[in-house]
Image (tube, rainbow, N blue to C red):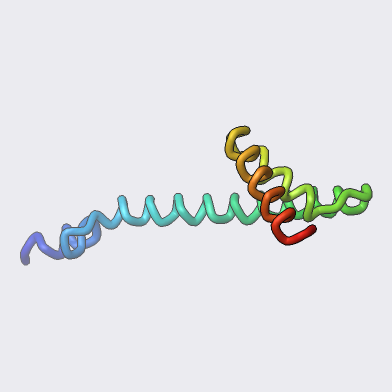
Length: 88
């Protein structure tokens, strides 16, 4: 008998099976956590809507808060220029 069969569980084709399994399982756990967090966020938006807030505007505010103030100011200036150009 050769030792090849003895090591085939740990490495297959040069791949460390335990390490690969660990990586895959960690990603799967994080995906489950992300799914749970997405559900929590959806619940918060439902709460916001039932409290009378416009969810579309709340999402826009969240996006703006992630940006740098100068970037927000530049976008608002361009938006104003474009509106005036269109007679809005």
